[in-house]
Amino acid sequence: MGNIAAVILAAGKGTRMKSEKHKVLHDIAGQPMLFHLMDTVQGLGCSKQVLIVGSGREQLETAIAGADYSAEFAVQEEQLGTGHAVMMAEKSLSGFDGDVIILFGDTPFIPNSVMEQMLEAKNNKANKPGIVVLGFEAADPGKYGRLVLSSNGDLERIVEYKDATETERAISLCNSGMMVVDGAKLFKWLKELSNDNAAGEYYLTDLVACARADGSHAVVVNASEQDVMGVNSRADLAAAELAFQSKKRAEMMASGVTLIDPDTVYFANDTKIEADVIIEPNVFFGPNVHVSGGARIKAFSHLEGTTIGENASVGPFARLRPGAEIGDKAKIGNFVEVKKAKLGEGAKVSHLSYIGDAIVGDAANIGAGTITCNYDGFFKYQTVIGKEAFIGSNTALVAPVTVGDGAIVGAGSVISSDIDQDALGVTRAKQRQIDGFAAKFRSERLAKKEQK
Ligand code: UD1
Ligand code: MG
Image (cartoon, rainbow, N blue to C red; front, side):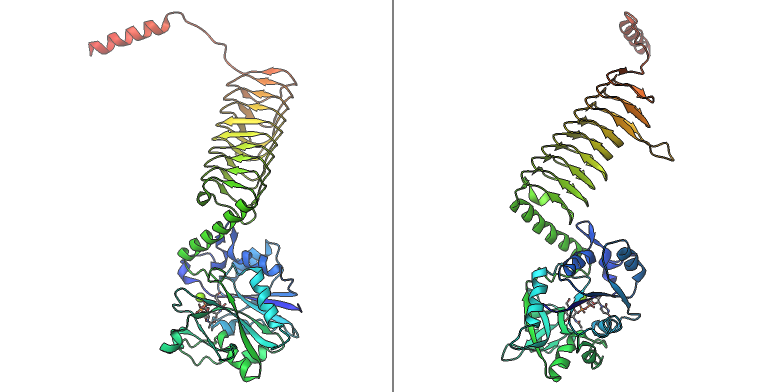
């Protein structure tokens, strides 16, 4: 494949999202939809990527600056149509004579294989097309542009729904909007576009007629409707999320992960789960989670920015937040929250705890209700718990504090000083017993109640 440049259109307002946020920055599986597309584009090895931006462009600039993508911005001040949008890339692509792949920022799931197919078709030695359009058979062609083929199967022209005759509207082969165009000709052809049509816009679709008038071939590559799914509304966003999740669930199961009820498990784009992990129903993975083999994630757990060791057990109802590193064979039980804390091999936090900004040694046992008090309202402090230490239930560990290896903390303690290795730390009032008090108390109260 030759030299490739990508132009991604994202200047549209996306009014149907009814959002302050730019349409293409809405998340699908924990990452902006635009980034799903840009990840695929990166796989093509483009020499240039140009993002056409208009309204809300500051948001896009901020998002791209904070991510690992190399894209140039070209501004389309006024949205005068898809053809007009591509014209804005002229400066960025001056002198470029390779293949230009034109994509829409709100159509995030074009597979790499489909892009490759378009590029292969463009480089077909036999008919050397100047333009390759990605088409699809729509179940409900609705308002999509229609692809009109000539008798030899070449693409003759694209007609927008608004401009189409009844016969043309009866065509079910639709325009996805995406295309690959000869970079040496692209801007020359774009200059020939007119806005004399039903929408009063410069249609990118008219490029086909321009190419043919110039003696070039135009051909169609077919995609599935799923591949060219676009997002215009919140309902579309939910449909795109579902499509992503369905695919990811199937991939996970195919790679050896058990999902007891696949439809209730949500993955992020980058979730990594090794074979022989079992995931119970209703588990949510936010970004950046890695689960090692043999682990079990029990029902209703929420994980993000977390690594889980081999054969570890998490949940039910566990919350693992960024920086949680759960060791091999460790156990995180119900209603336990872990944040920025490393738990050693076989460590256990079985019930009702908050462990934040902490290091917990191998085989340490953290009793029910233990809290690391890591924050004084201004700063965060660390708790270190040694290996094989035993923290009694309902302990407050006031950080910064260290509990030595093998030490024991008595239940109900508030620990604010370090405890040495193998020592007992306990901060509890001495227990008293008043014989007969309870019985006397009950009879007094009963008598009082009967008087009323
Ligand atoms: C376009 C196609 C139509 C196709 C459909 C598929 C044209 C003329 N029509 O129509 O044949 O069936 O997509 O979904 O191309 N954009 C800009 N600047 C503009 C206008 C649009 O950046 O001035 C961007 C939008 O943000 C969007 C993309 O281009 O990402 C497509 O624009 P949209 O208005 O949705 O085109 P459609 O009318 O749907
Ligand atoms: Mg559209």
